[in-house]
Length: 119
Image (tube, rainbow, N blue to C red; front, side, top):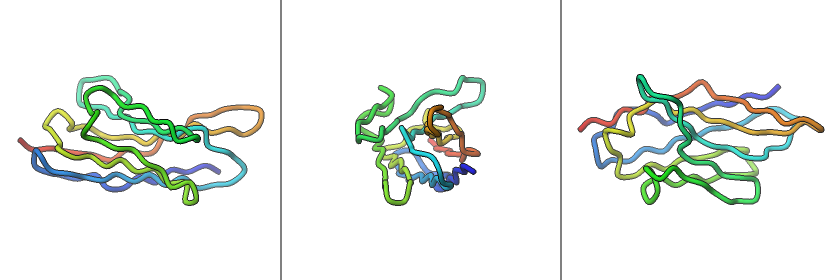
C-alpha cells in the first residue's frame, strides 16, 4: 500500500527558509516523479516543483531561484528547500507522487502541510 508522509511546514518570517520532506513507503511500484503543489485560500492548487526519475526538474516561475527540489532515491524521499520566502508563498503544500504498477500509472497525494510566511 502506498503512503506519503510529509513534514517540515510551519511559520516563518518573510526572507526566511523552510525545508519540506515527503517520504514514500510501500512496495511493488516504481516512481516516475515526485513533486510539490500548493493551495492558498480561495485559489486553485498549483504546481510548485517536480523532479522526475531521471533527475530532471521543473519549477513554477514564481519560485525559480528561491526553491530547490531534490530527491533521495534510496529513501524514496523528496525535499523542497524554500529560501527567501514571501508572504505569497503562504499555502498548504501537498506532496504528489506519480507511480507505476505495471501496466498502470497512478497519482497519490500527501495529507498536506501548512506553510505560513509572515510579512
